[in-house]
Length: 467
Image (cartoon, rainbow, N blue to C red; front, top):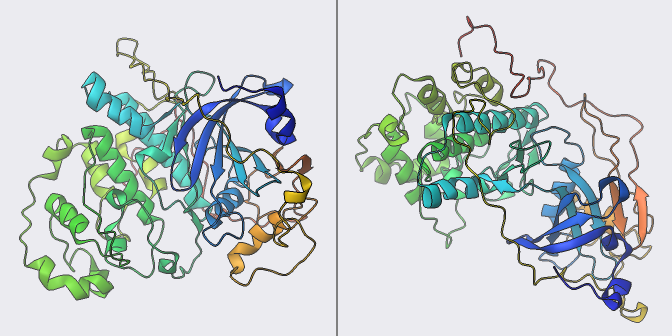
């Protein structure tokens, strides 16, 4: 356990003393992740994951990635979406901390455990239950016009022991976006989706893309659950800002064969297809038998579903709502809520290891400096309402968080059918202020969208319906 002497405790912000720090459990380009336990009487001992964000590259405060994650997760209330519990801003260095319900596992570690430790495939019940819940959460996002844009095994969390054991939580919304119809260009947001899970329309420079990019990523994850290795392991050329990644496309074409304008009519309109068509078509891609790679019979429901997820043409690619009604989920084993414990007691339960914890680390940057050293920049705690010249429209939410003594953060647009009045608080220094609630919410849910039952309570669609 990390030492917590009385001097350090006295200098820490008040919000931090709501938690008992256990240690560091993760680190990435965004910042650090810590494991802590709640000290609040109603939730004492509950494990919490606290994500600390690095400041923006411009040095003007909270990163846009963090702001996007807060604005979206404050509105997302669904069993298969990670729950944002609290938002904290440290007064000393303007560092931002997001507190989430803690998930003991993720698909990256589950797959690696099977590949390297137990050396056996993931049982069909677990594969089907994990996939069903991923699609269930994704259907919720897409129904509310949200594209995740960074689905990969490490961002698919799975709860450990407790009431939600085996429940999937889609996490990491730093690249997520609201999309609208008619679609507007999204390519100006830069490269999205980790390369192995990136849809071909993105690799070929599509100016408009849709939620279909998420479905391609889910198809890649499905295949990885079956084979225990990434399906398309391309090498990314990081020296070029271009979305065109020939090696990744080469890996895709070797498995799925060469795309054609007959099967993908808009292919010829994609910028990098026109520029690189000759070099691509000069290579002969003999389809080696996709079904043999993923070890599924070619006429099986599982292979049919996977093929529809990995359809080249995004317009023809299956949606999350359609996938949930696919025959694959109507056949035994029926998916369940606890994906880690098969309903059939004869099936072996695999004990997955807990996340490793670095007990020697402490929260960085949480010691509040003396008053004379407090930042005085107007975009931190002053009363100026002038926006930083480099801020675009999307950064105005960041400004509202930073430039407010009362922490009054404007509520984003509500989603119809959701409970937006949560008990989440924005906390800064020793101040705790409930979120302001909007006087009127605007529904974003599609009118034709209906709720889908949860795993374990799954009601199959009419069997005469064809997907």
